[in-house]
Image (cartoon, rainbow, N blue to C red; front, side, top):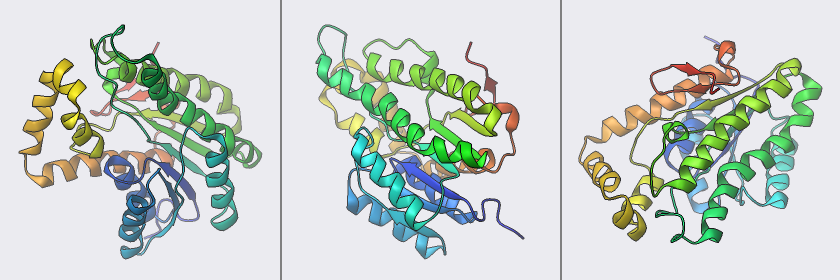
Length: 263
């Protein structure tokens, strides 16, 4: 049976663990050659080893998703060694800073926005020219229900995810004529390195105790429950990349497969 993404090339950011690792591995399972990027090379090497052990092809390129030179390097190396990029999954994210506006550090807050919005802007800008030339491409942003929620003491994350949902809507409107799709995907909830960092954060413990308690309860769940959630998100990304849901273009897709035009 032919693989859904045979001949495709993908870039997955934030692929050192969690949802990024699961998505990259699943794209590779379906035949895509996958460039994985994050700041820590050793984490990327672990992801690459998982992919290659399953017969996939992976290229590990460390870099800062908010740094324009690093992004240019990742994209140029991917194109040189794997071929033109067909799929971009922007997954890099930060959970904090936690706390009320007026008490949290504005520079730390702004740095979070760079990860949420500057990073997908840089990567999209770098891959779109050749996607437009080939009239083919799929860009996915891994988003969150917080995009549609007002959660006190979580302004950086909520606003970052709201911006991502709107970014996808605007991007889709601009590139639709070139046969390119853009979708915001809710990954669901699972204990990932980002969730573990939240649990350990003094700010989260002080200002978001209920959220920390919920995450701690999730840790006590069977490991296969977290693996199932990671697999569900990864499978949805494969379906979108394979063009199975063109009607989702420009939309935020919730974990229960509900499409929202994000008006």
